[in-house]
Length: 238
Length: 225
Image 1: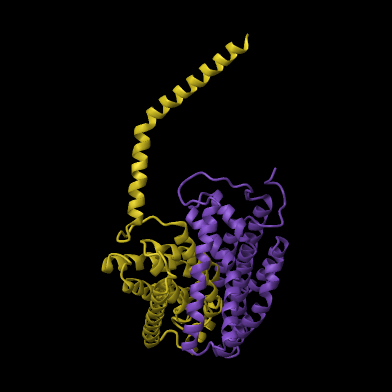
Image 2: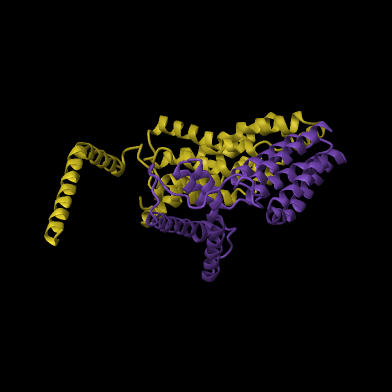
């Protein structure tokens, strides 16, 4: 075979390959166009700040995770608090940090699901310290439903404050489970502890719940003030 | 075969599940007469499976806080030794559970979660939340150092705390998270459902089965005997 023939054969092969590629491209052209259109629509939706249900970006997830880490560092006292049989002591100990940081998180990532994501991250770690507190993820979902029912979105700063205020107090009913299973039912010696510290008195329950709500509200307002200040300084970019 | 190897380190998901079991069982069965022996057995058992370091790290905290709360329980129960032992058992179970979960490295946990098809957003968040804690301590130290340099005064003063600590601290958090996000994106990390490779996979081994059986048998004996 001469060199000429070889070159011709190779050229023919390449031409056939190009033709084949074109045919394939034409076959999927409509699907490709539809996919690109879908991507454009998605991008436009994500860019629209007024929309509540937008896709999370990596930087959103990273920020929410960092905020969760802050909450976790400051919640290291929880393993000690759970052994103090005073109603609401866990919430009172964690209320401030569990309202300041979530509000900062929500004011940067104003998307549906932000609170739930923080709740899931938090639950994963709290379950190691005190299993019933893992239900904080459920509380986060409830908080979001309440906020959406009232404000429709996190666009308003007060929506973030409401979410921060309700987040920790909603875990108060979980204590019922703990005190009943672990302190009241399991033994007489713990009844003595409960009576000593007044855990079963209704007025203690009412006052502690009020104190937790007030603390979380104060924390949420602090979070909002910090976020506004950072926003003004141009640090809290979206 | 990988399964039949004895691994000194536990499979992450087994470690977390075992940690939960020890905490819950410890809290519920704290009054059992044999609970203290069970917890001592668990301490030896987890030490065999590569949790010695985390147990030693938590031991001083257990002695201090467990002792203090046992003392409170003893005093409040009118000198009842059993109440003190129950409280000590609860703390013991809690600290053993925490030691178990602390022994799992963040990277290994992320790999194990990725293998079981956990959404990428969650594994990324877990990884960051777990590995960010030491960094956070460093940042707190730096902000406090800056406060000292500026002669800002005591952090216990609410105004100083807000102006000189909280605002700069959150500012640092925002900057760090932005840099971290950029770094993650540069490494090709996406949140979509795209395929990805896990180069070093985590598999449960026979040692994990042995570990779980040991814990379960111990718990059963504690209740039955």
